Amino acid sequence: MQWLPKIIAVLIVIDGIVVLFRPDLLKKYCQLFSEGATIYIAAIIKALIGAGFLFGVSEKCHLQSVIIAFGILAIVGAVFIIAAPQKARAITGWLANKNTTTLRLLAIIYLLIGALLVYSS
Image (tube, rainbow, N blue to C red):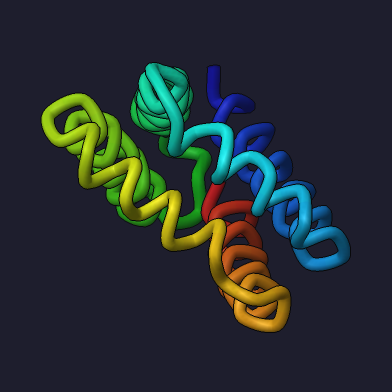
């Protein structure tokens, strides 16, 4: 399963590119996740990403500690969403109200993190 972190990292880069060119899609999904029980879907996705990083890390990875750190952060993020869904909804609502320039800047940071993960895996 050493290919799993690489696939997840490439998907993160693709997601960053999509958000860079279409920040309105991020606003739409943030609005969707800030309402009702859909926030728990985000928690499941984060937990699966974290598990994919942790179970897929191998000695063939360039920077194993980076993959492990992001795996742990993703699982902690999923636990945060489950433990404090109102705060998680507030954060997604806050993100949905940001202007497109701010979202594009965040997408660039997201792309850089994705590139680091691609290199590390």
